[in-house]
Image (cartoon, rainbow, N blue to C red; front, side, top):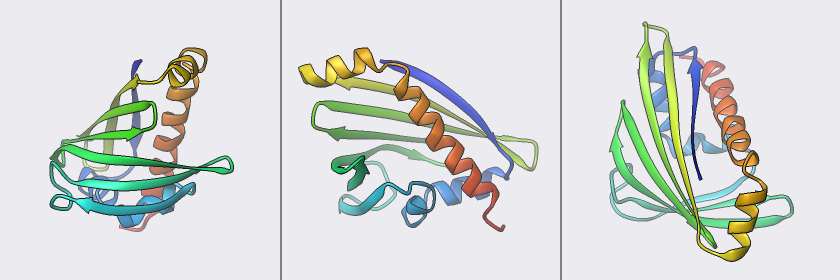
Length: 147
């Protein structure tokens, strides 16, 4: 499954990228985040691996994040792997004038287990909706963070 989403953030590109690239900010716009732990590679570079745990409902979901490309301020590509799912996300950032940033994501999901393939088939619309929810939360966080 693949899809692309866009949002405009009312903040300059440099500020958006700085907020996005700091793992300490994750909990500020992802309240279901339980933990983020660097487990390998040089931090904030291609090859870095992190263990991330989210609370999904009443269950914890652990995944491994791998940075595939860290070419900010323009591009950040990450891959998330958990049981039955591999999610690759291309984050593209572009200045829109002096005070706005266009954030576009290209999302690709590969389901590797029968259960997740079924879930992906029956819940196709839920994945883009959840991604847009995260994007909107980041936008709100960024726009409300003092410069």
